[in-house]
Length: 402
Image (cartoon, rainbow, N blue to C red; front, side, top):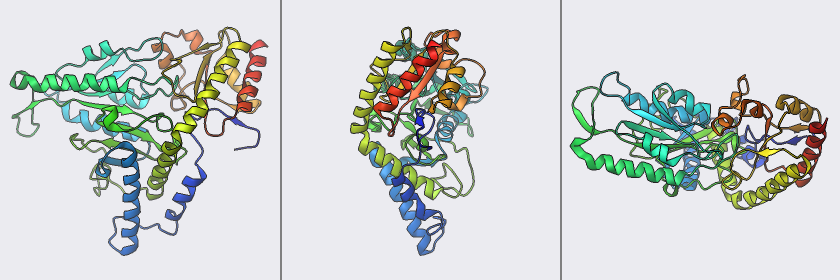
């Protein structure tokens, strides 16, 4: 990063940690072998890949066999959604539905809306309406997908409570037995019992700062993204518990237990595992440090820029996220002014930066279109200092007062 630049867009991506880069380095040239080959050098690489899988599994409290390496969060999410929903999408009596929240990332919303999809509202803080979510789940609901932490406003969703609702609905459904709506085997047409009910969470923003233990969370599937963890881009995983049956999206040589065919991205997968290991080991100290910087950021903004308002929950929030509305100010102009002054921030999700309309997340929490176009996201990271925050606030005060 150029000297003097203040980078406050870590929700979009993070630089690769030097320790991660060192872990990846041998697998581009020295140990480049295909792990599916049979000779000793290739088997050694296959073992290193398995070690990486075990590292990821340990932090999730999962089995190594339940970890599928993917090319980032988008592929992981699509595998979770399409992998389940395509099995329950017959035009006749064999049609399941999916329940998602209104503030999901487009990687969830776009594939989900291709099926019978129920979108659950959120409150002004961005927290999912649990009563509405429970009401949306019926006997044909196959999948619930609610993100762990929001990529725009940083709100941390009540994943454990959602998991309890899903578990309760699942138990009720199973208790109905033959009275429940039956699904039929696509080949034989014979009844095979009630629809399954799974819970997936997009945890792409959570890996640095939140507990990822899947049993404590109560999830059946979980998505992580390496580029948010100071790991390589186009790396990630889908945790999928052993009782979930997925239909693969990519067919071929049968890698990743037939869930993702294609020669493994060994360097990327090992880099992802190293990045997750570092992030989770350093999580308590880094979250505490950033929480203090976040509070300082909020205090300074409110003291220096009257009228500036915080979007999202103040308490149930990622420690690195500061999302602010500056009423009457054009966020694109502010971004350009900050950029010229060496501060890099964002107006919304980097993954939908080409969209012309205001953020669907801000719309969902009741922010007007005008205020949405006056809002900025600052997402801090390992390199963020108190001095950087103070300089950013001083620049904002100057630009807003022009």
